[in-house]
Length: 361
Image 1: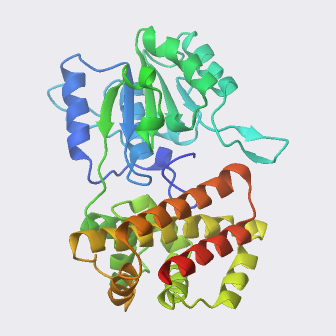
Image 2 (image 1 turned 120 degrees about the vertical axis):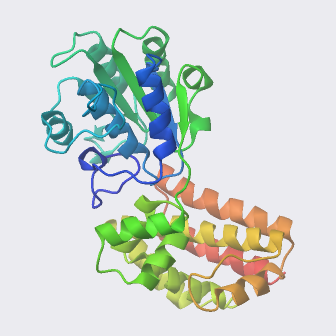
């Protein structure tokens, strides 16, 4: 699965529960009931908020005719029961009228490609050229649409311009601005917002019942309304890593470079890719929280003890403009590392060198 949920979290195609997005569901049901259902949807929002889960929920609803319906024949929910044959076939990726487009496997590099390429989208075009095999509708999900390269996006455009009858294309996008305007303008937009902390905590409790209440609260704060990210952090020992990074930051402008080197050595191991991705999220996120707190004069609730005091002190060591530049540089360094396969340890050393230099100003 390419988008919201890491592989060790319940796959969106197998998930029957979706919390916090009732308004989006109501909007879709209203359009369906009034015969105004769009041929293409663009579901956007932060990673992990449930975009892919909603996409599969819509797909099951459409492929089943209209979900479970009710006594009066008009559906009042997008829910398709998990014992329904459509639900089971979608969950096993075996429904003949559902096409999933995501980053394909690159046999030369032995991993998924960095983007969705034109060949992936051509499979979708071929799919829509055929008649439906199991019912009236054919549905395609592009996950994620902001990962398409230019040629792939151009290949999709004609399908959106001239959609076949009873067809639905659902685009999932983490950053909708990266989806070409020619595609965005042909889609009905659904923007999912981050969930309230109590809802994130509820989801964590349901899927990871062994996590304590204090840990749930910390994970919800760190994940910023994204249950998918909260669960990924929980499964990757993210709170311990956060505390490890905070201990390094809290000493600025002094840094335990031996500890940074040890952490960097860990990151260069192939199996530590998830740890690097967590750091790539946590460090820019920490700086962003410090900058926002300094801007409004009130820092966010701490995730670990002593965090507010450290943010207050560091925010005063350089101008707000300078810290914004540092945040942007750190974010871009981490992004470039995955994009062009840079040395992870060296990037981490560069990041802490930048933090050290800035806090000495």
